[in-house]
Length: 108
Image (cartoon, rainbow, N blue to C red; front, side, top):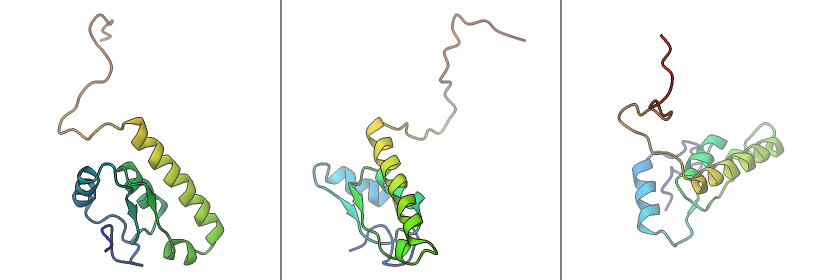
């Protein structure tokens, strides 16, 4: 059953909380998104969530230049996987300074 989006829809991940939950529930099981990917950014997103692969057809086969689209997907998938392994920051509800201010000069 496609958990990302309906087959051939090119909608991309429509239920991110469900995809996150699936990855968390099965940390040691290889998970592959098998439907609904329409853009390289969609593939990057699911790879950032920790999925192990994406299965593509329509997005590449239906592109004006399938070879170029396949190359775009390759880069996006690699980037998403690297980002996941690098340990991305989780979104926050408030601003948090990342630069230490203690002991630094103040310019006014």
